[in-house]
Amino acid sequence: MGFKCGIVGLPNVGKSTLFNALTQTAAAQAANYPFCTIEPNVGDVAVPDARLDKLALIGKSAEIIPTRITFVDIAGLVRGASKGEGLGNQFLANIREVDAVAHVLRCFEDDDITHVEGRIDPVGDAETVETELMLADLESLEKRVVPVEKKAKSGEKEAKEQFALMMKALVLLREGKPARTAELTLEEREPFRQLGLLTQKPVLYVCNVGEGAAATGNKFSKAVEAMAKKQGAGCVTISARIEEEVAQLPPGEREEFLASLGLEEPGLNRLIREGYNLLGLVTFFTVGPKEARAWTVTKGSRAPQAAGVIHTDFEHGFIRAETIAYDDYIASNGEAGARDAGKFRLEGKDYVVADGDVMHFRFTS
Image 1 (cartoon, rainbow, N blue to C red):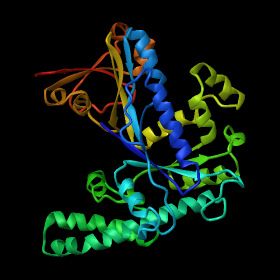
Image 2 (image 1 turned 60 degrees about the vertical axis):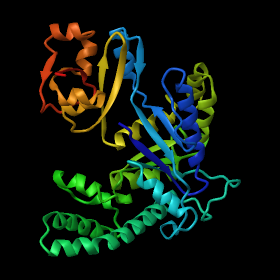
Image 3 (image 1 turned 135 degrees about the horizontal axis):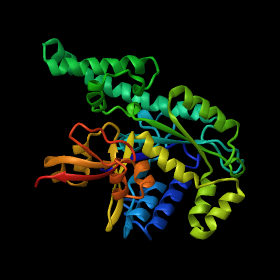
Image 4 (image 1 turned 90 degrees about the vertical axis):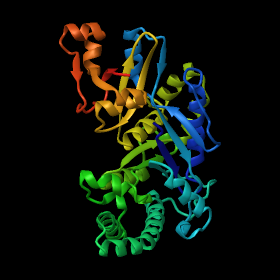
């Protein structure tokens, strides 16, 4: 399953520096994990997960294969993008193709790097991008809603349902609110997603601070954190320059360098994990002598769907899932110990996969 997180932002906010650090990190991972550069502006990176190493150690696995997420460096946006200003059309086309948005905000002062609007105001920058996306959504919906409304008035059931969802989004957009703030029933979520609205995508704010504020943040990042909390959005504070330096260091020197800055791990690790969480994903594991592997499914996925991620035959012929919770697997020192401790479970088709489950699927061919 491919999941894409688009990196967006105004010009000169550190977006490309951050993406370069991500791709350098991915290239470094290639020593241990398969790596593929799909295009110059696309980076496919492993999701850091310490649990996988522990499982591999207990399972005596010959290979470790993490789950992955794709980051896309999207063309810089300027005010007026919804009307095609700058690279607006390219920006809007690219953002439609991603599942979530990591919005890089400039939270540093540097007289040598000009701001496109002549001031340092990350909250204002976020509002500029959000406004352009809302305007693009509004224009798109107002064009599409007319024929759907006609069909709805003629009594077509599917058109009625689609029209109701379109109007729900239009009311919000006309009030200056993004589509993702819509209150939806479980049944409405997928058809609403299929409307293809830019502001329906979940957002993670990335506060790009100077090197001295990487561990503590600053007044700009604190303002963004407050905004994100109010919106229920994610927020990560990192220094793109530090991340670029870390990515170029030999592995043995990274921890010492980070510690000297008061950091426990690279900020990119947090960004990657937050991007993964932002997409509403959970991880389950398969462990054996050949490999310990992490797999990705969306939250709420049932056991047959998880089996299908490994192979479609597993889903079609699903019988049951042999399941051990991660903590139980570790505490019992593996499958045999979990069986003896009564922590080994047989789950059926209705079982909802929990993050960290260690699973083995039984199926008919």
